[in-house]
Length: 160
Image (cartoon, rainbow, N blue to C red; front, side, top):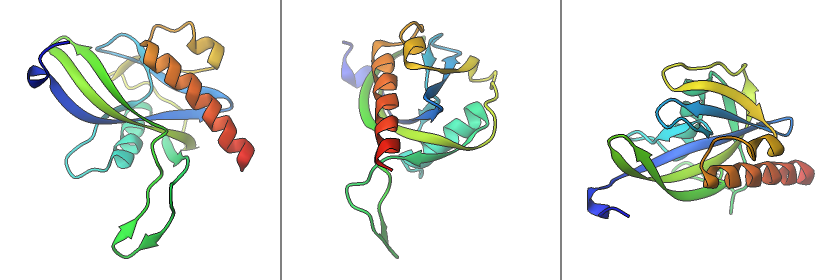
């Protein structure tokens, strides 16, 4: 691995949008692989807000994050959030050099809209089943996390 001091480190957020047992993925324009919608967390933005914003920008969908909380409460000055499904440290190759992404990956469901291709961000968009994910051009950690996310979403639905 490259010298960590020379590598750009970023906080990112993504959402695994699941509908009818399938995951929504985009084919990333720069990387050329299938990934869930997501991106860098902006200044003064929570990772959960970034995940929702990135899905809206990249797909046109309005989503709701789903999942668990360790504790649940809300006070005037303190609130709990839906926990990420996973937090992953990723080495992402860009033309400008390696980036380290500390990715907060959330599970989500569609609230409103139909997926639209954002040509500034991606070259394709689609819904994929577990079997289809296994044959996509993607990173091994993306394949594993998408399949795990499908299983977790089914477990959440079964518990509801």
